[in-house]
Length: 198
Image (cartoon, rainbow, N blue to C red; front, side):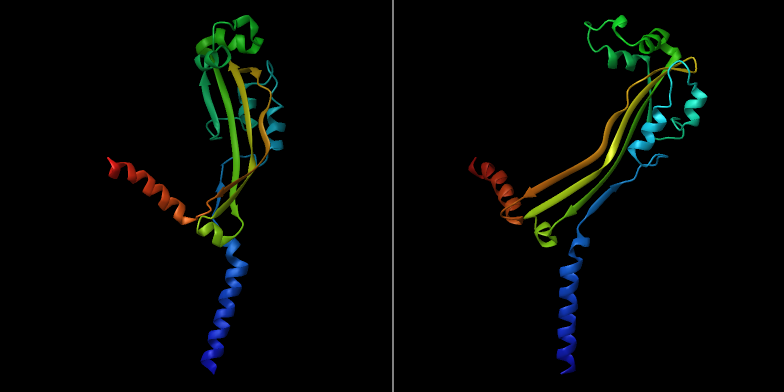
């Protein structure tokens, strides 16, 4: 009798764990970015403090826009700026912002910082069993991304691109396979059939 009651308790506990805890068994991904900024508003507020023809390179570094310390800032040169702002011959130098003109004309004395920050969390939601057997996989992604560009000539910022990016990322991807794991077997068979036919 004791064995039966222990068996029943074990089954009940297992069922409880499967019913209530299955959601936590679904995989999730978190992209951790080493950055002083943890939200879009914070990085944008600091970025908009950069004033062309006034902010110095030292001030820029103190604000946190330092490639040596912030891994999500890319250094690009005047050639990259030309390719970016003058992709074809129909765009003339005089059509560009004065700060960009100054950078292109300065050539090797010009450096640009491209700020690219992304924080993204991805999590699968829904039924554990449908996900496990690939009948339905529902993935939700949330986060934010920031994009910016500044040019520096002779230690002074000459241009600041308007702040860009996505303040709030929220996407949902749903994958459905009516046959579940058999769907993949069908694809394998389809791939091998032409070889047999030949």
